[in-house]
Image 1: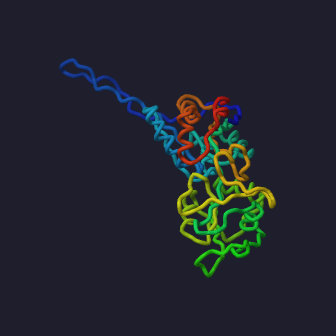
Image 2: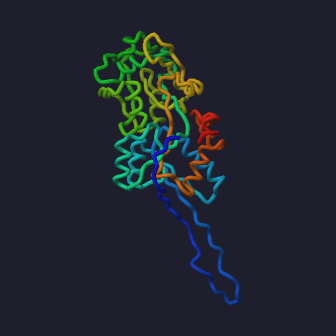
Length: 305
């Protein structure tokens, strides 16, 4: 995990507390008070929203007095809310930026603290009937980056069955997405995206559109794969080996688009927030990561936390 020193995060406590005992004619006591419930606000990465929702559901079984409210919107949206002190935890599929750390200090006087909670392979998806099986980062740049010259599948030597117009439908994410920023940095070499892509708000939506469009290509987390699509092998450069997005390739970093998944708090987490993050990093929380299609921390990494 990555830490930046700071102070405790905000907690919002909700619940019904007994106002006092009620006098009754028979001399009995008042009704029992309902226990207070702690609500943790968790917002951010659409890549992580599914696993975050399962975390919240499973944690309710372990801590019934804690409710975790999960929402997406993108890594940038979640971090922006955290920097204002509006949420307790921000999920991010990218590293926090130095400018965001500075903004947090300016807004709240606190420094963000980050925890690596798992790993992901940012997969490149095509329709299941597309004969293409592998692609290089250079080709992805030619497809997606400003100045790129590839516009048709035939220019990549690919013949799409059953289509007369083989214009490539480029599916992307909105600019507030951590996935968008990661892809821009690691696949496009920080070049700007070219115009004309279909920019969607969610990871699931990207895969669904690619799965229903023979001529489409898109990028999304490996956990969103469906039978309607296939994930391409990716090579870091021409002449280097093509590597599939697998658990082993993410751990040994041989897959070109492997990335870390993070949660951030304002200052060192305390109380219920700390207990929740500790649970996410435990065997139970990491089992959820694996079952959600992502890559959990290795036993060594869990031991070092």
